[in-house]
Image (tube, rainbow, N blue to C red):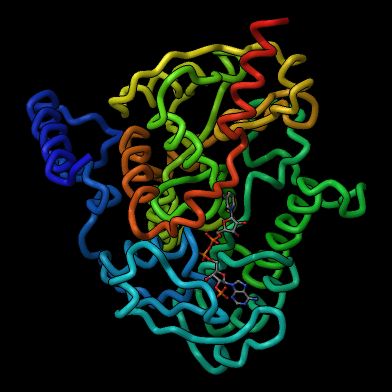
Length: 387
Ligand SMILES: NC(=O)c1ccc[n+]([C@@H]2O[C@H](COP(=O)([O-])OP(=O)(O)OC[C@H]3O[C@@H](n4cnc5c(N)ncnc54)[C@H](OP(=O)(O)O)[C@@H]3O)[C@@H](O)[C@H]2O)c1
């Protein structure tokens, strides 16, 4: 879609919203005016924060980081990032001119962090719990608050539904590293414990579920972007009523800043959307975001999907065994603390604009890591019809 048409649509949404909302603005849109619906308009109350914070991001240049950078600067905070200098941001690039870039390696070189003071740390770049142990111990007397980006992966195996923050996280990987989900969950749990050991109630544990948006580092939501734009007969996998969860990376980034501005502490599940969403609703929502000619073919038999090795196409995931409660994350605490969500249609359209922009190299776009290739989708649909 051309940017002119896009702008027209956005302005129409804003203008239409203004007319429809009148004086009683829905609370989920926040306290400001309707222009908050625009992607860069930000979290409720965008504008300068009442106090400028010095924020250090351990990481900052891949996916979540560039959105934290943009919003923190918009709120009037100062930002330093710490990376190896290998990964370059592909979105919000212009904001990095106003960021201090410290170089080191969380594996064995934290020299650049020594003798410095910050109000807040965002620990994004966690691949090992030992990284959090080392940085949290180093910074505990020179930083007020430490926000650790964990994951709802700590709840693996997801044996119950309605998983809130009181559910015990996984501390032991009985598979000895063979089960990637268990290994990831334990790594995040141990990282959380290290942040809490060093910072006590000054630690914030953010447990996000899937997030997507411009700059997405995996090809998960881009699958749906690409699939919708190709149109035609689409394999709609799963039961229509399967719950799905997905949030906008910008909502997560902005909530991180909100948490530190409000001097929060403790654990927060962070997922979206704000109210329950089924697979059928998700797919029909996507349809409204495309002009392509689309027909759905529902393949709702879990046994058949397993036979064909189709276990996920995020946000849908086959809800069975250890994945049973995967999309039943309770976010009441975060919502109470002010988590706000953009409309998912906006997330989809902005992800689409980014996916088809120069920010995504042709090589990636032409060789995506999608859960289904067009050929496999056609084969599964043929088998479904022939069964
Ligand atoms: N995507 C999801 O749906 C999802 C869901 C739940 C949780 N999470 C979590 O969200 C977090 C966000 O990840 P992100 O990649 O988007 O964050 P990010 O802050 O945008 O990027 C990660 C950063 O880590 C740096 N880095 C990597 N290895 C490093 C090292 N050894 N020393 C210093 N810096 C290093 C990278 O720069 P260099 O390469 O230049 O060093 C990069 O800047 C992760 O912890 C992930 O587990 C993701």
